[in-house]
Image 1 (cartoon, rainbow, N blue to C red):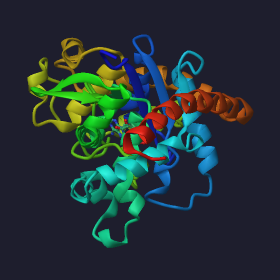
Image 2: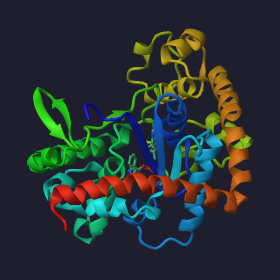
Image 3: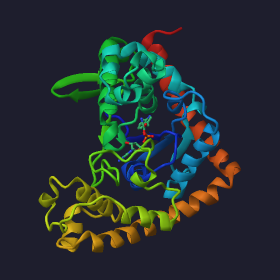
Image 4: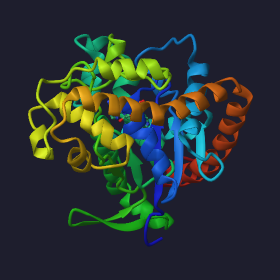
Length: 353
Ligand code: TYM
């Protein structure tokens, strides 16, 4: 093999409602990439038990994320849509990666620090090892590109570290079985079994911020529902949340530079740009000089136009769980066939009988 086959992989946790951050940071990019590469999109149910073990409605949450994938426009026939727990090779490779990765690497993860809070000793071992499972999700398909929001960047750097250490530790064996690819990392030539994944984070809204505080990420766990737009919000709620979004008293600038030091303005312009597939500069060339009292209704109209069809289709799909389950079953079988092949080679490389 002279090169890794280009392959997209990404995942979303089935915990809580999806919001505009998930939509712009992930789902909308997933859809756009379908024309460029083979894509595998996963609902990562095993990740969602790391912070909280018992969920009343994990199955319906898994179906609802699947519905969001499909409603956003992901094609589950051309590509693969499935849930993580249905392909046991993810957990198996994660175990091997637990033996590759170092505890120090995991301890440095900001998401672990945030989620574990002050009582780190009491966090689950799964929460600490979370990035190892994430690396396994990606690498069990030897995926090369991963579309995510900016908050996942550190986890993808760790995925590269794990891949690199595995490739170097097992360099001899990888050569022996003849399944490696010659790549260059920095200026170091490496005979790699696992690719160095490229994060796909760019775009005008890589980190959508809270509508109530431009210094905080829009998140499922924010206690204020006004801080986020949920994909399940109806048109009136979307418009009301945008109307109530925090802003500053100045008019919008005409240049992107003028957004510096104005996090709320920057966020709303970024959202507008991402929802309309434009750049921030382009949006400002139209709205520069206008007050928020003019810009917000335009943003609300745009958000409702984009999100309403997704919302309606999600509702329709959620009412048809048999269809969702059939999509997941078919996706799991196809994903499983790829994962099985990788794990066969991994067994050989590691020396498992
Ligand atoms: P999760 O479920 O928290 O979020 C799903 C996706 O939404 C993005 N996102 C955002 N993007 C922009 N602005 C925001 N405010 C915002 N909030 C969330 C996330 O970056 C993510 O892309 N660890 C992952 C799930 C995962 C995964 C993977 C992703 C598991 N295995 C393998 C990629 C590849 C997570 O918790 O995402």
